[in-house]
Amino acid sequence: MKIAYTTLSCPNWTWEQILNETTRLKYDGIEIRGMEGEMFLPKARPFLPENLEKTLEQLHSMQIKIIGLNTSCQFHDLDKFDDFIAEGTAHIDLAQKLDVPYIRVFGNKVPDPFQKEQIIERISRGLQELCDYGSERNVRILLETHGDFSDLDNMLPVLEKVNSANLGVLWDMEHTYKRYGNTIEPFIEKISPYIEHVHVKDTKKVNGQFQLCFIGDGEVPIKNNIELLKKYGYTGYLSLEWEKKWHPELEEPEVVLPAFIQYIREFV
Image (cartoon, rainbow, N blue to C red; front, top):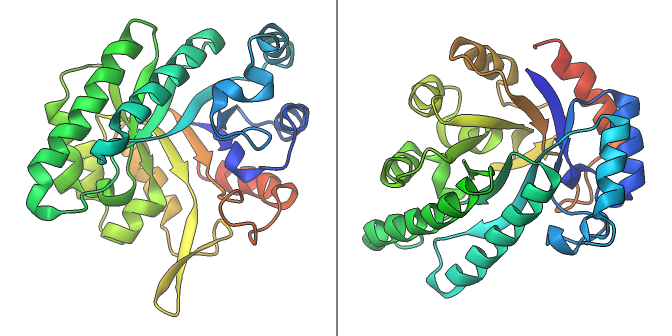
């Protein structure tokens, strides 16, 4: 397996800092979720049309691979459905220009269990549209195990309903831990054929609430999860999703990124 991190980990770094630190720390790739304060990546400075050629030259000369573009797309809400289709297609276009293999999207919620069938249908329709658009541009769509879609009962119907080989799963270890605890193998057994990317983070309960914590200090069975990935043949990336962007109180990237790569190498 290869090792990466998302730019959520370092929201205040410039593009140049990200490139330099990725090289210095010997990460195998970077996953882009926000860049220099801009969350809609086609508008981020390095990816503007006038800067794209220089960005590609930097990536090539430093032998750094962008492994994914992470969007905010989520298709449970009918009122925002068209906006998220537009966001998804714009990110697919950018991924094609950057030779990035996938974009990440969400389900994300089943707010009304009595309308679950309609919500599953809507989410599947959104994924189908992006899969069809992406397949013509050699960009895959990865559905993250997030929100109510950390659950097999919601995830599997969507995966089975979308008629496209261009759909995969991004497994977030922490979200499924909050749902399944240590009893994760039945989930992995069913989802493993779809898993194409993995997010790693840790959590522990504090006063009855889950709280993100330093990798290895929490309750997520990271080593066991990696052994299960090996068992089911996974050879992709393990990517640190240190949510510094959303939780500024977390440790700085200068501390976390070197610690993560040292920690995770013991298991891969």
